[in-house]
Length: 273
Ligand code: A3P
Image 1: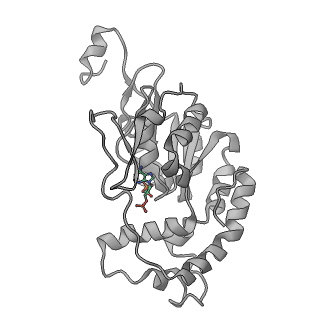
Image 2: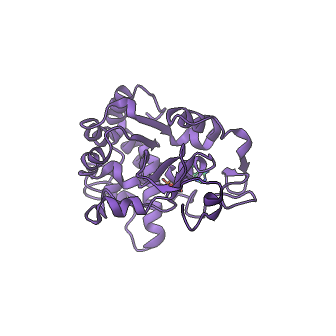
Image 3: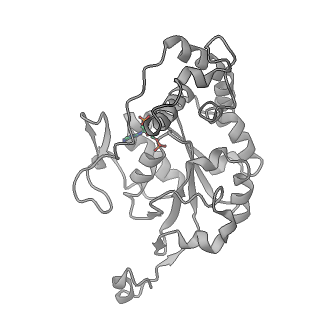
């Protein structure tokens, strides 16, 4: 029993920390926090609150350290964590495979152009001296130049490349793909599919969400640790800087073949060009 959960002892239940059964591996700015917070409404889901980054940053600390980062669970509850950089980090698929080759993998994807702008908006919010988006997105700082695929916000959006690395280790059936766009428009429908994939009872439904017009996003009526309605924090749902439509058009053309291959492999058309 855990000293943090004295009632468990009374009931003779055992709370133990387990390694994760499922991971939200990405994608950064796809809606990973929303997905995790929505899933945490489920009584059979226990998740580490902050990003653990074991497989990319803290691997040398060892598996025992990793287990300690997980919340205590009771029998029948699943353990999860989300670290969005896992999806794009070279060594991570192999490391995850060594821990648990049967693990379930969740990936939230969003139009890679919007995702790149969202990523840029996050960086520029911490560094106002950052060059303009278009100066970073193209090799010679002009949209007539080549797209700079070494710029991380661009590179992350080539989803098919990253997915192919994961598919060397895990079959497609161990992945579940969440549409970042639909997670905003119809969170209950997306979460229903996730519950099914994770083998959870369908408990999270429309009645857990309401649309907050001020925030412009779905928010939660109540959740673990919150008895009142609440939205995700200010860093989720930022306004994006205005970008020249010619720039977004060039990027859409750049991503088009990668998106097409991603649709082909996943068998899902996400609706981006
Ligand atoms: P923006 O801030 O660009 O709008 P992540 O948690 O992976 O960093 O993703 C952040 C994105 O989650 C936000 O990007 C936002 O669009 C999206 N999102 C999805 N559902 C949301 C919700 N209910 N509240 C706030 N943001 C949400």
